[in-house]
Image 1 (cartoon, one colour):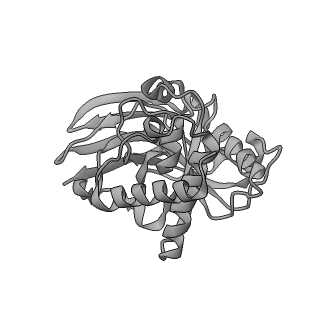
Image 2: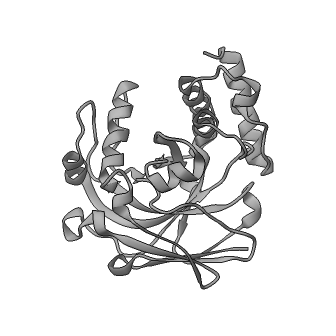
Length: 261
């Protein structure tokens, strides 16, 4: 494993890249022996400094849960990161393009918990019982590490490339709709770019939430009531440029729109 001083230094590099909306050289190119444990340690130092500075944690994101996303990134296992309150946008928001290093959009479902979720044997059914409602969400991906040649170690270190989240559509209880069959059509500037079905996320989007609860148990933690859990994208990421408008149509679950200015 990397030594604690180096882990702290890399966390500071990522924090500076976030502040200046820039990217840093790949961690794995500089430190080929860095492990997944190192990457979560880097993310943890970065997270704790943000919490100490007054940011409020509102939930977690799960990434790389679908074959579409794994094929797009070349990474074959899920990862996770944290979401702070100042990264959540309302439906219809105009979002400042310049606050990101780069912008891609993913189509997801967000689970809002009304009770804690514990491992080690958390199941899909436990997740459904613990979920107050599920709502459409767009994730804004933002990488602070050069994209070419990234590995899962780089991505996890960079808070799983999370930049922001737009919530919208029609919130529904898990028993109101078959979550596997939630489908979405993603448009950029009135042109359809991506389509997908939520079963693309590990055969059921709640499976990713169960995976995360079990992962947290390994670190002596759990998912808490009130947290928002982004379950993972069921489309490939869509690149966005300044001035682009984005619309995602989830059928019975409504629509989400935003614009990058």
